Image (cartoon, rainbow, N blue to C red; front, side, top):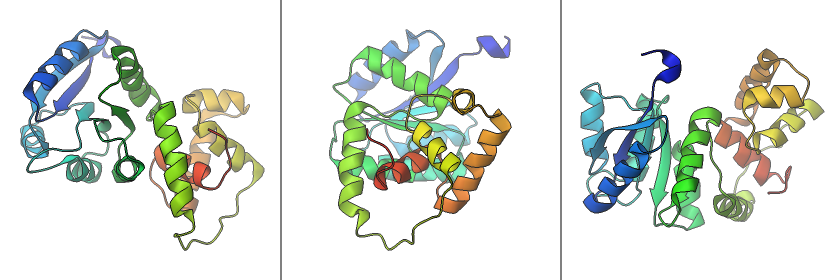
Length: 220
């Protein structure tokens, strides 16, 4: 099978069997996606991965026995950073949402989402490395403003192009599309990204977005 026709492999991690089974059926029905395996919790996921079953995306709950979503996301980010975590949870509080993003999640959905948004989120996480729904964006803004004054950090000096790049990261554009908007080469955009990772002490596009929101550089 050619690389272009290869399906994105998804692991579904949730301790509710009926929901997990329904999700697997839904994801398998999406064009370009297939469910690699299902698991009850992070411990089971870890065992599957250690058996060399490596998914592209992990769709997981937060509340799970033995190894919950927080611990699972942290373990994945440390050991398999190329695996993208998309959270699907009943928990809608800003503290949980922000913590999951800080641990390495690429997107966060509530369990009352519809199948169209789920597909959109999977596509966005795969193609753009992040998915921020309007609800989650609002929660990030609220939470980050609340704890901004708790963080003892010196202001970072950024030039105009870096600030413009940060504002574009808060959109759904890919890095290649951002390069086109800024009339720059993809290589230059990659240099901006790596430089800002170092300056802002973050490790992902989500980290760039959170910094931009926290510092009032964009309206979401």
